[in-house]
Amino acid sequence: MKYIKLFENFSEEEKPKSITIELTDEFEKSMAECKNSDNQKGFTNSLSTIELYSNGDGYNMVKVGTCPYDIKRNIQQDYWASYRPDTNEIYVNISSASNEEIENSLLKGDSIPSTAGIVSKLNPGYYCKFENGFKVGEVDHRGFFKIVSVK
Image 1 (spheres, rainbow, N blue to C red):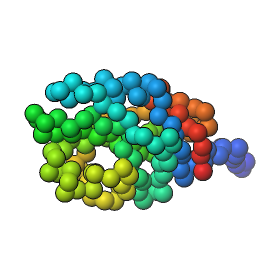
Image 2: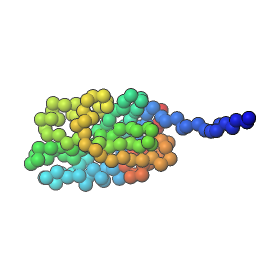
Image 3: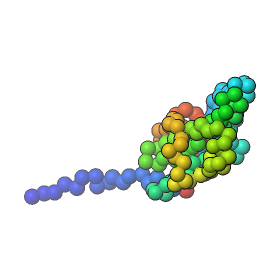
Image 4: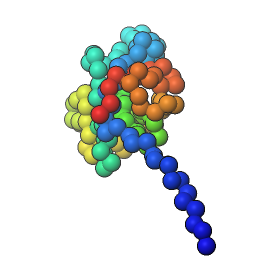
């Protein structure tokens, strides 16, 4: 009886432990369209590059944008990016918090671990898919994030 080796040359692409991204002009434009009741425009994180990582057990979330605090509604929306290597995506969650909630939580920082216990306070957002995987120079399908390095 002969046996055939299936998938002999098959090797799953190894995913980077971390990626470093830049926010694109398209993302900045998207954030500027987010306005509060006083017509103040949203803005992006001021960091020139952002490192996102996933170690299998957890990941970090980095604040990439903010819709300014709305005094009339007592709410601020922040946009948090995280790295999802298994699906070739960056996922963006949205937090909506009152001034008091922001002051009394970890949401006031610019980077938090997924294990911080606030993930349940985040609203569903959207994904940004990298069709060709996580390669330097690649931009996601929305045009929001550009990969500048991988580790």
